[in-house]
Image (cartoon, rainbow, N blue to C red; front, side, top):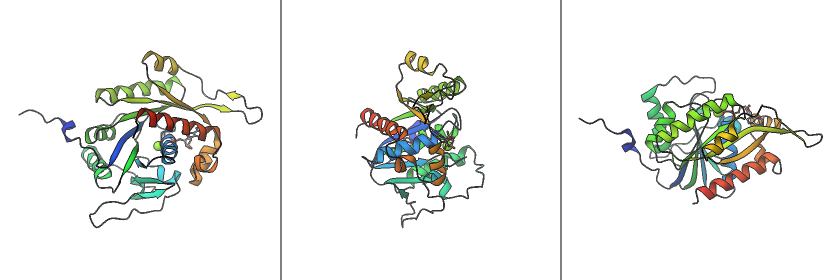
Length: 264
Ligand SMILES: Nc1ncnc2c1ncn2[C@@H]1O[C@H](COP(=O)(O)OP(=O)(O)O)[C@@H](O)[C@H]1O
Ligand SMILES: [Mg+2]
């Protein structure tokens, strides 16, 4: 008997136009920060959902100030996403305590992803942004097998230590025929508050050469700004509180590019 092709399970989510994966090789490079701000920037003009699929470290409920909220359940047994800043949000963080560890393995992960995609009342969405765990494991594979992704965005910091993992993440997406929408360089530089000069916090590696060589798109360069961290801890993202900051403008430009690559 032939082995069934797992990609044959792939089904769209009804009424959801584009599903976009946000990934990184490494943890701590700002993937959740980028997913959240990108989703918020898109939500100014479109109907947007944000799925926190980082089951090992769900950070989106905290970043969006909705940590203690519990999703309602419809009579059809579907979870109702929590709404903040016009975004529909779902996260494992709503369903478990913040301190508890998730120890699920393969089959349970596949089941959990299924529930996040199928058993949530997403409604009509132009974009569903999925914040993936770092790396190239079961959650990434499970997402790719279950739904047709419009594309993936890879987040990195400037250094070569992160670039190695970027290459792995890109390789994974290409193996499963998911288009790479582009790369976002986070903590790219910092603006000196006293004179506006750019400070290179992390040494620039070969990222730009790699992007050029492979003809990928660099979607943007997000500066390091301590306010991002403070605002995230407070649950009020800078895009809502510092509307004219350089970071807010950059996220707005990135959202514009995404909407041009994937029109609705
Ligand atoms: N551009 C930035 N400027 C300042 N702090 C940032 C920036 N991007 C991310 N951070 C901070 O770095 C930490 C890791 O970011 P996070 O988005 O949680 O990373 P990941 O999801 O990749 O693990 C958080 O404390 C976050 O607030
Ligand atoms: Mg994260």
